[in-house]
Image (tube, rainbow, N blue to C red; front, side, top):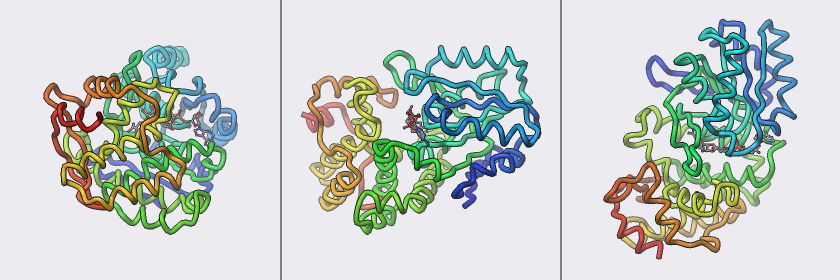
Length: 353
Ligand SMILES: NC(=O)c1ccc[n+]([C@@H]2O[C@H](COP(=O)([O-])OP(=O)(O)OC[C@H]3O[C@@H](n4cnc5c(N)ncnc54)[C@H](O)[C@@H]3O)[C@@H](O)[C@H]2O)c1
């Protein structure tokens, strides 16, 4: 499948194919005519895929360099970015070079941030290797690093020249990471495309869902594509992708990153937000049973863990999407239909309690 993200002069293609990583040199030639490539990866993904990727690019005549960061959210920092700037500078990279990210959302966000700021912008392309990055993080041009305790607080909008998705790499991903990505797939189904949910319901088990993963990736990409094309800078309709994320971010910040996965927090956030919307009479009740059934099917939680809800609420208020009077949230009009609403802090606090 080749899907174009149509956003004017910054349009780019997503090339998804079983085993396409073997054709990486052909893909790079489509959009890059320079010589030097820096591959940024983390030590887990690098240990499996970096050698092969580097060798293929080398054989096609490119001069390749690699920068390997430690696995985990802590690498998405200004400190790591600075080390990469220095590495680029030491190896005389100029704006004619290319940065290639090879990894999950952490590596993708960090690489995009570095690419958008080094010498005011150097070409950038993404090879997302986690399910979450394939269906979500690699598409849409958001880049970021974290400040201590404040996620994604420094970042840019910077579109890649291309995205290469090889579902084969998902075979080395841990089961929990598959579940995490499926939280975003379920979100895409709930907000925009109910056929995603039908496919997941038709599958007899978690492993049958995984067997059908390529279809689910394509459908989820199309949901994100539609919303990004309509609202590149996240000022309107693109916010629908935040379904469950306001509460989810509150949970993540309260428990501390690393103590709950993003997907788990979003799963709980979707359930709680939907419960709130049902109580308000905005959302039909049957949406909740389906949401819970699907989340359970892919081994995701549907209720708060032991947590101080007051702290969750405070963390939500400090989220960068919050305003002093309240917050924009996404609610369902039905299965596969959603809208953005503004709600006050009093309302959401009452509902959490
Ligand atoms: N830019 C965006 O629009 C956007 C959207 C959603 C999330 N994000 C960001 O994405 C990040 C989360 O992404 P993530 O869940 O991919 O986390 P991650 O990058 O930390 O990857 C998760 C784990 O999977 C491993 N991994 C990745 N691919 C693998 C493979 N093929 N085989 C074996 N192991 C593999 C990684 O080494 C890591 O340990 C967060 O920082 C979040 O803020 C960004």
